[in-house]
Length: 299
Image (cartoon, rainbow, N blue to C red):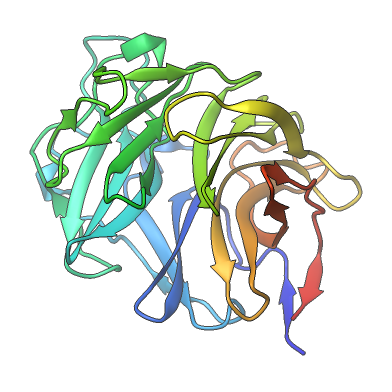
């Protein structure tokens, strides 16, 4: 038996996006620094067994982003037609007219270097009042690439061109940006499709404290019709509090999904002190079961 211990990595990291590429598990993270000016690149970790992790530090080539002056975070990545596309949020844009937003980069390797693709933010304005942060990339079975994103209690979905350089109309309604109505949505959307059902998850509450949590709703469409919303992960003393902003993996040895998320140490009020963890996640028939946070588990 092998034992996975939480947190899985030493140090302060947040907003994990998890993928399986080239025979390894990858987790892309925000550098969780209280001084946001220190959050000026993205790190990644890779592993073949979820036990031993190799750090890939500073995977972005920032020379293509001279206008990014403070804070970048919340990476998301996809592999499409032989190239890796990684997006992240920059400059904490909170109103129209600010420069920054959701950036797009490209590389031939899952560890970079990732270079600027279009020389400007892909999304900069607050469409449907959604702050351009917390992007999540999802490729559907027909090859369509959707982008879910948004802060300030508004979640948008849009569709990307095949070269990832622009937003193109959504199939069903012709809109460029469609707002998804989700109860208690704050930020950090995440999409799983399993056996024809779309599961959209998101974070609620305040990322700085124990109110942070994760909910989900399901639909037969990637764009709308999400129903049966339910909270699946929240503070669980004495283990940890403030779990949220997550990704996921499908773990073949167990033939089940795992949630990859950050959480807080109970009693530590420092906002930047967030740690990376992995726990089991069971879903099926349109439902995700409540998730139990652990200090360790075996497979």
